[in-house]
Image: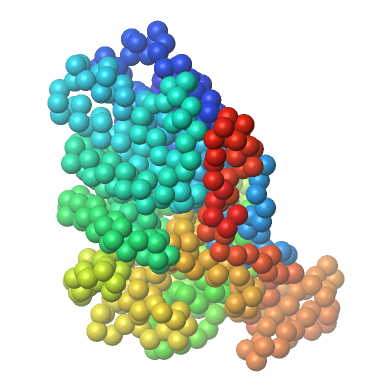
Length: 612
């Protein structure tokens, strides 16, 4: 069953049972209603309730024009992308309130995670309570353990996200009665304590969840893939922020274990080309996709993500020269040391031909004036969609009627979680050394994906394997980062452009300073361009004294109305300036002042986030 159907029925069931748990941690539904008392009689009932979690956690491309947790339009706050004018700023003051008023998958964009809202924790705890106290006599031991694993997975998922945003959060492991103020108004627990509880939940999940519970339904492999993601985040956050070395090791070892469950299953492989992962009308049977969200225009279940990559719609932020320079050449070397002909050229056409094939699959292969940086992302629009530029788009690639399926979790993420966790363990926590075989199972397996016919026709080539004995010598490698770790990070950056990874990666690596664009002037530049030959539409009076290019020697040439022939150089992003200064407090989000006051009025204390 495609899970858009499950979304509908699951939300209906959740609404019938628990409509009141959509406000905040202090607004509680009645726990015993006539409907609740007659529910939980069979696995069908339980499955119906479980399905209500799917749209909150397996968001895919979201729906309509909604951007929360969606690529392209949602995940635009990172050092990969630069906008014209002033860059989006970090939060700088404590908000009056931080509580969501909706149960939808709403988020805080600058933190890539949820608001201060524990309704989904409560739903998970209700799920757990009902399984234990109502449904258990109606289930076999195997079914009881499976559904308990599903419920504990969602609780662990929500707490993983809450911790990534706020750090310390209050941990609730049971349903709280309306009169239990001591527990209801408890202060925040240390993030390590909370994540130890999450660790225990996830261990139970992998020991008890079914390996197969139906098509595109939560199972052991989907759960393991997500667990590898959450454990890598927390393990590396604990490690790089010097919080708790023992916990870092524990979580990273679990990340390896969870990832290996997926990798050793034999169920998934890299035999799909990269472009097809993000633009297919159906991902059913795609061997790399572990879970996907299905869309169907005929049923009105659609999104807008493809339309914002269709070559006509513009985005507020686009790929900058720093991101461009991070792409490896197809001989496996950084551009400074590559032997590929044209490797030192930064014209878009040459980049498409000389770089890792994910570049050509992610960007239009020529300078495109619709993009503020001239590099236009089309990763989430099909090659066919590009043929409609200047024409009317079909529903599949226009407006909010797009129907391409969304990969929710895929093998590439799992193997990159695996190899990074192994590398950090080896370098800092006494783990086994990474071997060439490990690279071949992860990074090199990804690089060996097939190319589609269109890429081959352009001269695009697969990237050479990464060799442990001859790692690239990158002159721009960050101090204190080993060559191996640097290449793993590069692989993630190329793989997940415009997806959900980059800002969270910067936060867990303690590299949020990369968001200060004053550290590298390439943040304010696009690719190399011959304006007259490639984008002559800019050579009009409208753009006089506006458009600029930067020569190799640093000279900036401003269009004066007559010097079009001299406008050859790196594109200067119009009026682009740095964001406001920020400090390390932005790693975590503050709690709203109203929430602190509410606790105080009840005689309790809610601590504010550190440094806020």
